[in-house]
Amino acid sequence: MKLFDKKYGTLEYDEFVPCIIITASGFMSSEQFRNMLDIGLDHFVEKKRNHTRLFWIADTSKHVVRPDEDTRWVVENWNPRAMAAGVGHIAFVAPENVFGGRAVKKYADDTEKNSNDIVINMFGDLQSAKDWCKSL
View 1 (tube, rainbow, N blue to C red):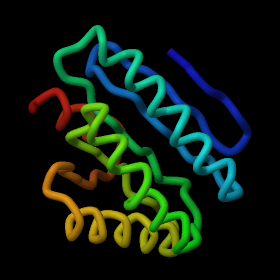
View 2: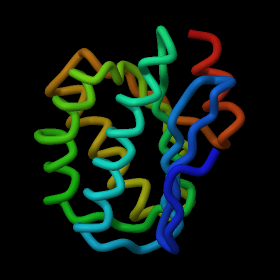
View 3: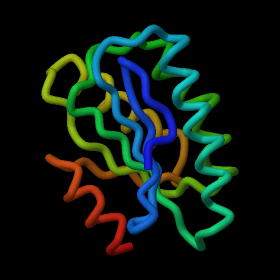
């Protein structure tokens, strides 16, 4: 079920995994990026009421370069709120773009250094990410 649909990205809810899927479709400003993550987290909190466990999947296959300030904001601002909301696992669909890949890797490395509460795993496609979530 689509929850948010813009040219630069979408948010979906898959009740059968269950998970929130955030998909980057190309370039987005820092404001759009942060807003989309915040809206996704609001939906996560709402949908979590119906599930014992709910997962977060980031389809970054079309993700492009992200400023370091955005990565820092996610690690320092969004992550603590996500953990408080119950996000314990994040599955990434790896970016095709090398620069997008660097941004995702930096986020994963920084998250690992700053928290043991979020487990991050990388996948080559969306179905593999969903299957991992289902297996947990």
